[in-house]
Amino acid sequence: MKKILFSIMAGFLVLSGCSQSEEEKPAKNDEVPQIIEAVIQVPETLNPGEEAQLAVTVRQGDEAVTDADEVKFEIWKEGQKENSEMAEAKHDSEGKYTADHTFAEEGLYYVQSHVTARSQHTMPMVSVQVGEVKAEDTEHGHEQEKNGHEEGNSHSHGGEVSIELQAPDQPHLNEQTALSVILEKEGEPLKEAKVKLEISLNGATPQWVNMSENETGKYTADHQFKEAGTYIITTHVEKGDDIHEHTETELTVQ
Image (spheres, rainbow, N blue to C red):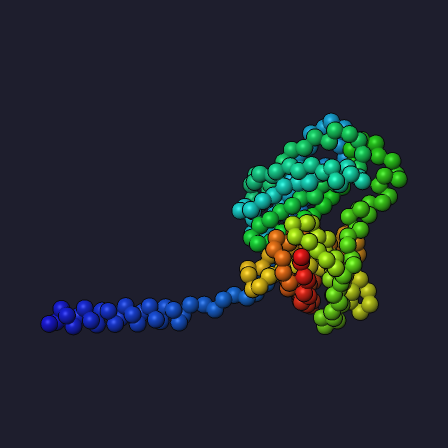
């Protein structure tokens, strides 16, 4: 009889412990994740036919990101982005990913790293001068990267910060869609901010896209929508300890 009572009491204790454990589970963390930051390291000048190491260091806060889902470099010559080449990068050490590439001809080249890690995507870009480059070849800078589609846009004021998300009126599935954000504070462009997009569809796990400042106060990124529907795009803006703003926009993808 004592054994039976002991078994019953033990069962109650186990159930009680499970119930308490369930109640003590921490609430879901809805905080915005720390931004994934990627810094490209490539030579500024090269000779034609010279092989160079392309490197990008990926961090999240103070932590080196060693488990990126995908890291690759896109390389193209000025005015020839449609003929770009891709180079897969491998993790070296402490969040540094590398790949080798040979620049065959002289000219101005662009190197853009595509980093996908921890549900975020970021695409920093730099230029490389190969051989002798004429002044007129460089004076346009990144002009071709700034001509993104701006047919549709959403504008919002978050506190003192004006946030304007620009996107095509009719983005299509499985196509690179140019997105841009214009930031102003007190009528002046807001530069050197951290800007990221939280893109979600029907309550699914959101995708995070980090944006790069290609001109003062204008932040850009490309994104490929995999499903049709109306997406909620939350634009998050941070700068220092004073600016933490966000605004939501709907975008329908066909």
